[in-house]
Length: 499
Image (cartoon, rainbow, N blue to C red; front, side, top):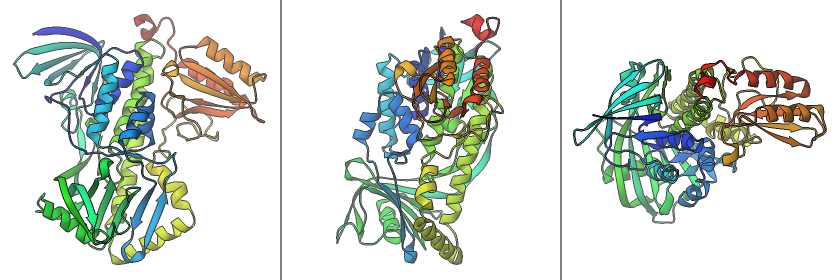
């Protein structure tokens, strides 16, 4: 048995594991990545990358490549059968990229390799033994050799059947989503054009016979997906039948590249942190595919954790900051499950309820509520955290602590990575600007200050992951500065000693 050591061991090299490792590496944390599979994961799987994921890609320098390889839809188009249709426009702030998961994974792997980290494929974790100061992991390879890896921290990103979660004895309660889904991808054509089907929109057909998603893919292909009865077979004929029964009519698959059946669970881990071990992505939570929120819940797990873990590793943050990971992400998980559950229920209602739903949707569309509220919800702007980081800051402040806002997005430069970004308004000569500059000078590795003009003196303190840490008028700033200072280790604390 060989022995080695690493600062952070990431188990699992799907998009969430790769994103976790890439962000840690960008923040200067030594990281090792292992995966039980012999080669990178393939298949399109999750295809919608909403703004939270796009921001991570941007911070990793992948924004241009992701945009080049993807399709960016301009709207969500809901076809309500005889009830007409509703088109929800997607502004730049709300728009997702449509990118097959294997391409997302490939981009993240390239970003990681550019930083000198390669995935160790064919390395299966068989044992995880944590103690107060390290975690000992036993991993085996296909050739029969075993390795003992001593890590300061372990991140389990190894999916639904997580070995890390099982080794830690963490419950994964929940239930199977009561439907199987058929998914087919390929080229679609129509006898008389595309019957309103365009590559600029994601289409949802809410027919009497069921719901179908038709989404454009890069390269001129389309995906069709929908819940199907038990016993349905994964064949090109069944894919065409789904298109005929629930689509706009007059369309046919001219080429079916892939067709498959899949089921889904709705489960959440009993703990997202156990000592020096953390769970992210499908190892921490799984839910129905409705709303396309899979990676958009998992990769923000990694964004929440990466800056905190890097801050602790480098001695900039007290280890207690890691206690906020579970309650913050658990709140986001609950919000997503509530939203996807609501969408699922609306999609399968009976005839009378369907009429009410269609009427309600048309009314919300006519009044602009869908564009103002529904699209930002899907885009992740409605996600919010409980105020556990600072604990009890001014809740009447705008923007409210624990929220995200497209008007305040952290600058994605490597120089600012892992730092709070403090924006003050009122100009450089104010008392507020002076206090903010003093804080940034005192904590240069943790705070970057940006003074801006404005008629009113106020501030917004952004966390490294884009959530608001604190905000308010000038008289509220000393309290926010004091709370931020409390996150910094004292000379006698363990984090400071380790450093």
